[in-house]
Image 1 (spheres, rainbow, N blue to C red):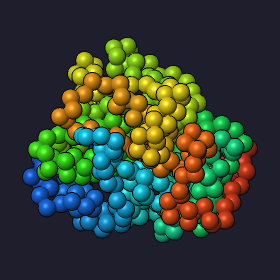
Image 2: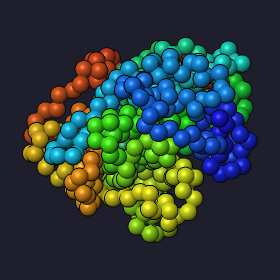
Image 3: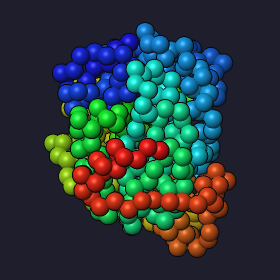
Image 4: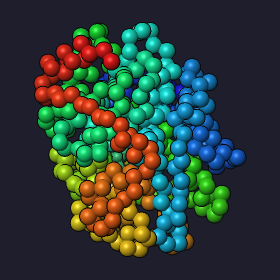
Length: 432
Ligand SMILES: *Cc1c(COP(=O)(O)O)cnc(C)c1O
């Protein structure tokens, strides 16, 4: 299996090369050159994440030296559960993706990418530095996944004062090969600094760099695993497909569901739930695709005005009208997020995070046949967003043990002015 760019202008490469590179050299996103066909039978007897992952991902590693390592990669990466649990009424489920070390679904992709990069043989003996700009969840997942990984170090840039206090604590609590830089600016400043460093070929002669953002193939492919696992479990019981409503920002998570459906998993409709950053709802309602500047909302991990993985949806369905048939997208206002959190708590006694609330709102606004099963995708634990949810439900949200363990560690970040020369000096002089 070889990987090519969504923009069609990069030479085909093996998966190991695509994993290490992140972005294709023409600026596009890596996609497989051909797709396997994997019906439910291929997975007979497989129920855990790791058991489902090996037959699911093996075709994508054909011809690469990592293929033989895939069972080890999967058992290392998928060491927590992603349960499909019944939600508020008949036929509605919640796919809980928040049982990993940093309590958000990004743990799945980050841990898989880390397990792969750790095993890639590199000609270089110097450590590979993974640079990440984060508005909160990505940085923590990447830090947790790469913590103490030999030959790899992580440098996280986040906007000081603009992530939640618990998120900031998580970013700075790892130490060892993980450094947190509290940038005195916005998320856009952080992202611009990272892009500049990744494009700085002279710096890279001195400090080998890579990234771990949402377009990385090493995060996209493994996110298929929980869609495969949950839809297979549902299919074995009911002989019918499972539909999903997915809180969506950069479209990495939903693009994984789309790929899983395309290669033959028993997945029905895929509904994209966004916040008021509504580029996708506008497109799927018939408007041209028109990226916008992002707006701040209560579901801050979805504050994206130009969803990067849209190129992957278009690659799967190059014709816009076909693409519009394949998905539905629904926008959610902050008030609708609050209402969904309050209503769900009143009905079930359970508290959802603001991102998951967009999917609950989406469920309420689509026409659905009660005979068909629907899964709300719960992307983070409510305890990460206690500042938003606790005043709404008037109770404290219990912190899951793994998150509590991180919050109990001391935390340290260095302040950095948003000036590329300072970052460059920091990267070449700090050896952690
Ligand atoms: C990142 C994130 C999202 C958005 O996922 P995409 O793959 O960017 O669409 C949704 N919810 C939470 C909690 C997240 O951290």
